[in-house]
Image 1 (cartoon, rainbow, N blue to C red):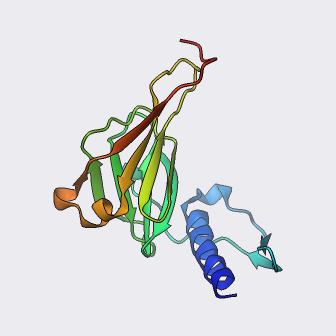
Image 2 (image 1 turned 90 degrees about the vertical axis):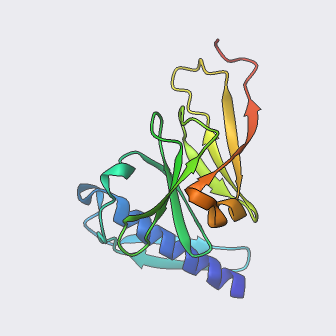
Amino acid sequence: MVLYSALKSSFLKVFLFLCALMPVAALPAQTVDYELTDSTKSKSISVKPRLISKLPEVLNETSGLVFFNGMLFTINDSDNPAAIYQIDTITGETVRTIIVGNAVNLDWEAITHDHSNVYIGDFGNNFGTRTDLQILKITKADILNCENDTVEAGFIRFSYPDQNS
């Protein structure tokens, strides 16, 4: 029960923040119904998204969000700096920029995390010709405690055998 409540609470906070990130024109005019489920319970909720704040221009190509330690982090899509941005969950402002010193943002598409690491998917491949696909792995401890707001990433490199090259 406690886990379900915590997940529901975290989900709602992130969902409401995501709704705040959408352009005003994209917000639905009416209430939207969602169903939260786990293995033992199901509960419907109604949410009417409202604009809380707009993101700063530096985040014009946000390509993913993660929420951990009570903080929200995002990345930008391709050809932007190799950086992770911490976003204030109330104002939407960027409060910290963390540079990934040993990486280039070729085409960052996704960000996720587990109990100890953050992973950034540098695997955008619009034309199917990239063979240098990779996932960056950065420890949460490094992100939370980095000096000079710079971290180093480990790399998980991969490609698909049937890719065009």
